[in-house]
Image 1 (tube, rainbow, N blue to C red):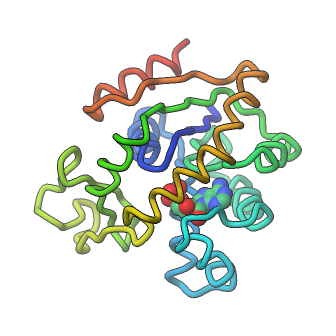
Image 2: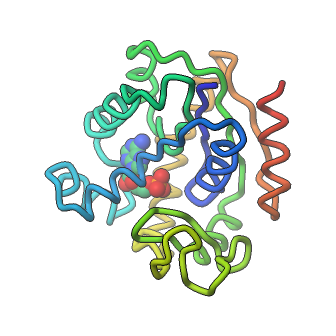
Image 3: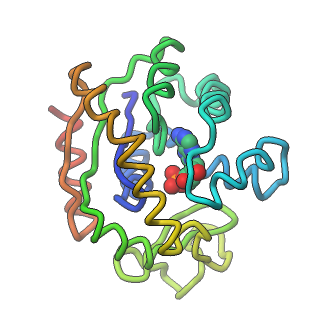
Length: 210
Ligand code: AMP
C-alpha cells in the first residue's frame, strides 16, 4: 500500500499515519520530521530550510523532492509507505509521478480552520523522536514526558497562532489544489476529521478497504 495523507496542518495526519503504520506494518515518511531533524543536526539542508519553516512557509520544492527521492530508495519502503506532509504542491506531486511511484490512495482528512487553530495550540511534540501528543486528545502517560523515549515534550515554534494562520493560508493556496489533481487520478478519498482520534482512524481504515 502506497499511501498519501493530506490535510491542513493539525488535521491529524501524523497521528493517523502512526496508527496506519502499526496496522499495515509500513513506514511513515514525514517530510516535516525529516526537516526538523536536519535543523537540529545543523546540516546544510537544515540550514537552508530553517527560515521557511520558522515563517510557516513551504520549503522549496527541490529540497523536499530530494528528501523524498532519497527516503523512498531505502529498502524498508519496498512493501509500501505512508507519506505524511508530502506532496504539498502540484510540482511535488508531478515529481512523485515522474519518479514512477504509483500511489494507491490519497486520504484527505478534512477539518475546518477554526478547529485546526484550537487543536494546534494543544499539540506537543517530542524533540528527540518526533512523536506527537495533544494536551486533551492524546496525553502521554506521564505529563509532558514522551512515552516512547522519555524526553520532555515541547510546543513546535511554528504552532504559535500567527504562524499557524500563515500555514493555513499557504495550505489553502498551494496544497488544496492537489485535491483536484488526485480526484482526476481517481485516488482521492475524503474523510471528515472527528473529535476523537479513534473515530477518525475507523473512517481512515475503512477508506483503505474500499
Ligand atoms: P509538518 O510537520 O508536516 O507540519 O511540516 C512542518 C513544516 O515543514 C512546514 O510548514 C514546511 O515549512 C516544511 N515542510 C514539510 N513538508 C513539506 C513539503 N512537502 N513541502 C514544503 N515544505 C514542507
